Amino acid sequence: MTETNRIEYKQELTEGLEKEVIAFLNYREGGIIYIGIDKTGNTYGLADSDSDQLKIKDRLKNNIKPSALGLFDIVSEEHEGKDIIKIIVASGPEKPYHLRKYGMSEKGCFMRIGTAAEPMPQKMIDMLFSKRTRNSISKIRAAIQDLSFSQLKIYYEESGYKLGSAFAKNLELFTEDGTYNYAAYLLADKNSTSIKVAKYSGTNRTDLIESNEYGNECLAKATKQVIDKIAVENRMTTKITSKEREQSYLWNPIALREAIINAFVHNDYTNEVPPKFEIFSDRIEITSAGGLPEGLSRQEFFEGFSVPRNKELMRIFKD
Image 1 (cartoon, rainbow, N blue to C red):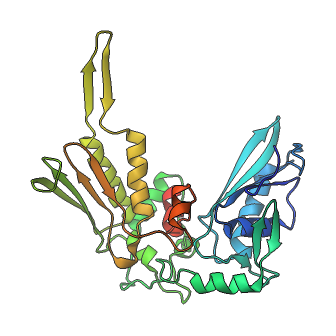
Image 2: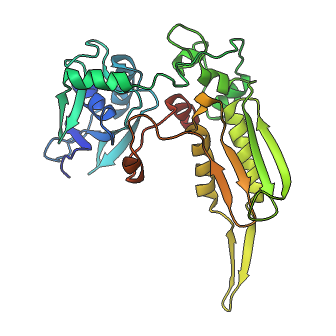
Image 3: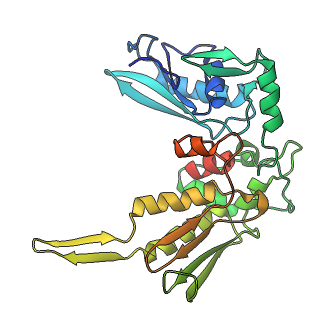
């Protein structure tokens, strides 16, 4: 294996890690960093990969601005019988990302050019900052500040996590001035986000035979309710052939679950338009509101590039 514009090798954990991560956050495709492999592709491995993972998470959490939480994943892998670390970095929606220590300067901002992380010109830094999405759910103050999160805590406990007293800060549910943001409102026990699941008898919206409303509560719970409801509608069909009986679902259950979750996580909630789900006699339509995120062109979207819209929701749903 050799380094590419999306793959970086580091023989060991060094001080320059944040620089490489920032370059990928600012790159339209993101990238992957392998630690324990040198520049020529030789595997050296790591003596204590578990400890290194904790160090990496702490450094990326504290040394990069805006927050990169939810935009990277750290996994331990074995390569040629040795432990290595793989850091998967997504393209960030709030470019330019920079070192907290140096701010939005050429000393703090980096970009990926070929196989190297290079300082970003100040003119580009200023241009990216002027385009930065300011109207995001993390920056919008929740209209209601008296929020509770018992449902969210239950989901975390079921996944083996326990939310401490500082959970709202750790999950980035505050605005910069310390008030609950719109992400917190969506995840609170009570909100006004109503999710509709409609069923029609034919191939158009003329004859509505069933209308279900979910939501007005923690978005994680609403997502689970929609998944369960549509799973009931995902009937198994049987086809008798000359050799055997073939059974299959109307829709692939795994793909269906993924589509539903993506509709919730990547929906543009800034206009207070929730995702919607419609079941017809010949298809299911899942609509997630909003256009392309800032910095992502139509061509890049269809080429498979990804810029997460709601990184706070993305992180929590992943947990």
